[in-house]
Amino acid sequence: MPIASFVLLVAAFAPDAPPLAEAAHATRQDAAIDAKIRAAGNDVAKLVELAAACTAAGAEADARKVQRRIVELAPDHEDARKALGHRFYDGKWFESLAELTKYKRDEAARMKAKGLVRFKEEWVPEAELPYRNMGWARNSSGKWVNPVKVARDKDDAQRKAAGHQYRADDNSWVAPEDMPHWTALRWKCGDAWVELAAANQHHSKLETAWELRSEHFLVYTTCEWSAGDAARWYAEKSYPELVRIFGVAPQERIDFVVLSSLEQYNAVAGGAAQVLPDAEGFSSLHGAYFADMAFDFSQQPPQYVGCGVSFWNRSDEKLRGWGPYWVRWAAAQSFVEALDPSWNFVGEVVAAGPSGQRPNPANFWAEKRIPRWLRYGAASYVERYMKDPEAAEGASPWALREFAFGQLRSGGLRKLDELFAFGLDLTKAESSSRLYHEAGLVVAFLLDGAPGDAKLAAAHEAFRSALKAGEVEAIRAAATALQKELASRDAAIRKFAGLQ
Image (cartoon, rainbow, N blue to C red; front, side, top):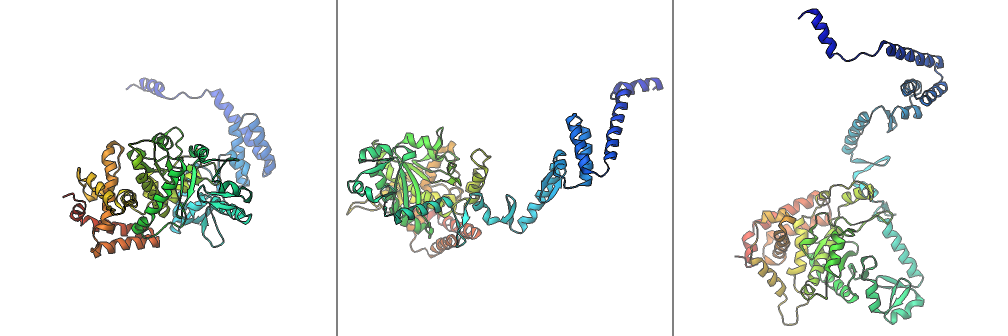
């Protein structure tokens, strides 16, 4: 190629060079600010004034040059560091986000090896993090306690000391001067004492629901009082069976919810308000569900209120009879949650706040130690496989179980490995709903179907003992061993239910 052509080609594709006048101006400007910096010498105060003047004049590049000089002389000068976009962390300044991120990542790895995690401005034992995130505190014995509950207990103690009487039938304290109202079987709704019909109307909404306490449960219900009374009775009947399954009982009273209609049930689970939501939408599979995503951010600290939820429509001829069974199912879900909470997940949600980014809901279930099939199987067992607490004298107490077996006979029992995987799927609603009942059958066999099976009984007892001890990996290992024993008895389980 001729030299002249090559020169033309390079010129065509070369970037435009700045005009000579502009380049000269930039050089003079750099020289001017450099001269001013030299004139300030090591006087940080003068340099700060110079940087401010540059900023005021819109000469940001010059201001940054001055601020870099300030940092050279005074490495901890906060204003200059911040102006340069540096970040302060762990007693050090980092000049870029990438540099800080790497430091934090390496630091977290080092601390994790020591069993420590970051909480605000300090490193704390990893086991403490969920409680700190939830705003809990240690009491005088070193136990982590919920300050909302502590305040409530203190309030109750003060009322008792003032001569108030506790009434379990609406979870209230009645002042001495109001005792005649109690004697007359009236109920306090707001500031007024009313008759039962008016009280039922007042408590028909979730925000003013009845609260009825029993020995082990506290039921919140929008049903009429008599239904709430029956609900706590049904829950109590399920309690010893749940202890028999898990070998351990919750340390505190267990909350669950009973709503008065399917419409109300659907509204609180998945309506616009989503007062008691479940992440996966499984409320549609049954007449009860577990509200795994229920939080109350109106309290300080915010409270996790996840619980079993059911409905009992006593005015609907078709649905009325199912209410007691769904009540027991909901009570069982709350019972198991009390044994096996997901405090890490809950702590992350509380720390993020009501408008913060929520962690993946799958993490809630991944944190569990009790397998999901056993949790739901326990709920199904007390719903339809346990001895009927209402069996009339002379009638078979196992009629309800026979009914449940009969429902399973039409479709059989899926492979136990598939059952243990417990793959609930809203796109396969019928199969998923049936999975609840099949899990209940396996629990029924475990408790009642093989009384002479010493090896299975030992595996069950090992699981119960591990759960009582509370060591996570031991519980999971014992659960796996129990599943293995049950899987080897597939034929016996089918025979127990008459599925062969």
